[in-house]
Image (cartoon, rainbow, N blue to C red):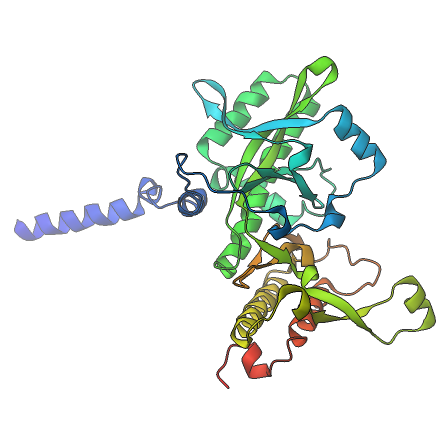
Length: 367
């Protein structure tokens, strides 16, 4: 009887393992992501830090410029604040008030506007994009098929709640698209974070509600994916180089699109010791290997330009941020028609070659 009792116990254990409810106890993608971010974004509301001076921020003034039409629009309908929106108490719930204005605007990318927040963070507000944009390729289809893996339960509840309140099919499509885009942003972040965990700047993605001052002072609200990052002092990669030596080109290339060799600017940023250069070079090679892996194994292009790479000051630590992952066949090759993998690796190689380190030093080996 004792043997039968033990056998039944083992049978029950096996059944528990095979029971699908048991698998639900395993942490999901979004649970793992949020658990890590809770630690990285923890802040004590009773402690305030002095703001980082604007000259120490990784600001590319070229990214701040907008055309006259956009400038007029921002003047007529200025942004005022934003919230994180979720579903609580049987309805929409707004929390984490984030005051923003044109004075807080510090840059823009292809897909986001960036505003500085008073507590040494930035708010990045998603731009409106058409579903035909190459950003929404195979990974967008992947998250669309399994939204519960990438969105929190209160976000899914919010999506359903907003869809029920909306009668227009166009408005419903826009809501659905925005939530799928939020899921896509998380997947892009996680894809690269798992390959380069210490180099990717911690980023919290959420659904936001951005407000503008509308006609006659009536506020207008826009539902859009947003994200937060902690402000770090540093400079974009392009700010560490100076144009010193022209590459050999024919007459037309020199006239239309001159190309220069990249050189590290010691004079602008002070003396950098060799050990820091070795560490930067080594981490850049890690970025190259991750880029190669995604291209060769996943057929994905890590869209990483000089605007997405920061070298922190004064420690000269390398960080990457605001990247996206595109399908290889959808990625825009640009005017030079260079394969994207080669283009990104070539830029990084030219930069670290200017350090004049040996191959062993650049790969972190002892010499």
